Length: 82
Image 1 (cartoon, rainbow, N blue to C red):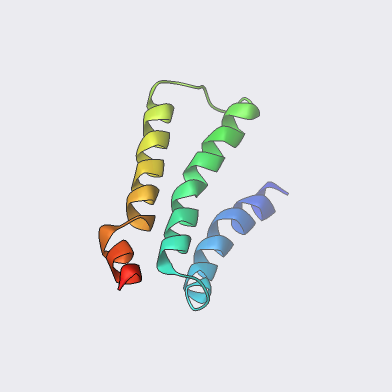
Image 2 (cartoon, helix red, strand yellow):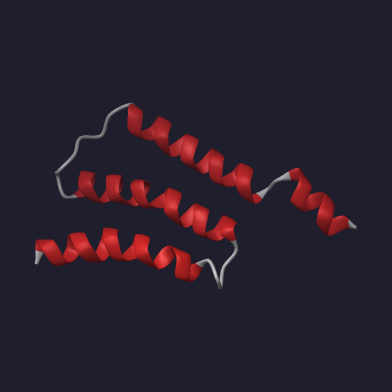
């Protein structure tokens, strides 16, 4: 069962990313990929496999800031106003 969860959640999702890029914007896929470690950290803390420490909130803020920079770029907003 554990092997199925590991293969299904990691390998399969990474193999499907090129397929998904045909149908979604690259920014959407990027945000999804960057959120995977956050979800994994939260899940591991909830089930007791990891400990909440100072580096996790810092990483969370950095990942969310990176996603915001990608999705709210000035070039994208300038292109929409034209």
